[in-house]
Image (cartoon, rainbow, N blue to C red; front, top):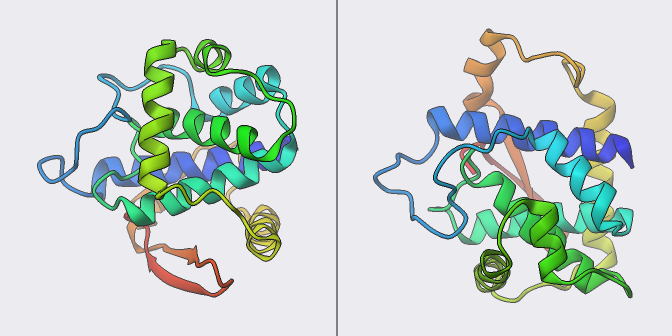
Length: 195
């Protein structure tokens, strides 16, 4: 499980950093409840480890949360993953995946404490995320397997190692890096990393 969290946090960190520099211009981005006023001081990895430690949701919840985030950014292209949005997208997606996937889960007030936000804010994040997904929470076994396989393959191919910072030359090359979006029917299509 630790590898899934490390890979997902590294992947989301690279997307957020890339979108901060090369993504949708701030003037055209849609401002929403997912935008923090400042960048959180906690890293994405530490935030995900915190959620994993205290939420005690099943490991499959993190794969489903990844699927939900991917669906969300495909349906909401004016709300890209940035350093201002990624933490709130994470806590909302894990909350919803735990509620949908697990028999036993914590309430919104508990997730709000884990996420470092108010209960009212957690409730708004949940509702906005649900509407952003079009309430499409069901994940077919084939979609789950496709995303899991993608994560496993990417973990094996991950370069540079997760514990090293990305070289500046690679950061500049990130916008050229293709991002593979997985459709519900299991097919993939390639697009630029400007999620």
